[in-house]
Image (cartoon, rainbow, N blue to C red; front, side, top):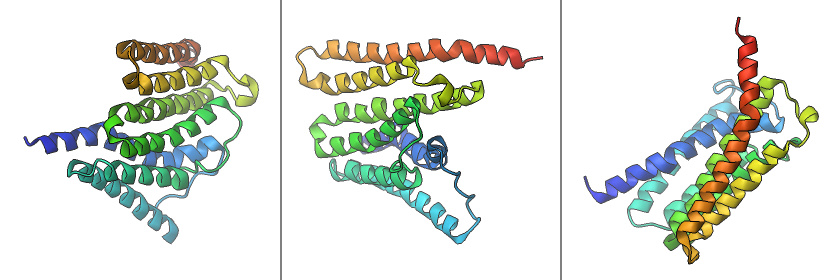
Length: 228
């Protein structure tokens, strides 16, 4: 198989799938997390038909950006992808709107902004592409996944934000994930490369482990109580 095809497949798997999920699903989930009304169903009006066409165009543009990157546009491809993600999350996902109170909501919105940032940096600085993409992977994908999971878990556990306030564990989650992002990003500029990788991994594991220890037992008790 030609090397360019392997590279294109890697881009589809590592970025394309998740970016399309984030823009498509985020168009519904992010407004709900922020407290906005859910969008109307596709096909319910001419406006929604145009929204459907816009989502399809965004997906095609993401695919096209990856083809351009493999055809010798290491700057233009990621920059086009970053612009599509920024517009998709900003318009469809409503990331330009202020969110309701809640640390996990702030983390979700921060992740939505870090995704295009990571892509922009990788396009502007192609020689530093791999570290820059960890802004997308750690600060974007993983932080958003845990932020959305926290929102869903609070809902199923009946824990409104007015009651739980600002959980220290959720704050710890955000701090450790951001530390992991910055540590991994700076690893290639440091003399002790593998030390930075180890600390970045340790920070991510600390935050995700604390999150699981905080919500895991509550979810298990909820599941046990709901069983006959």
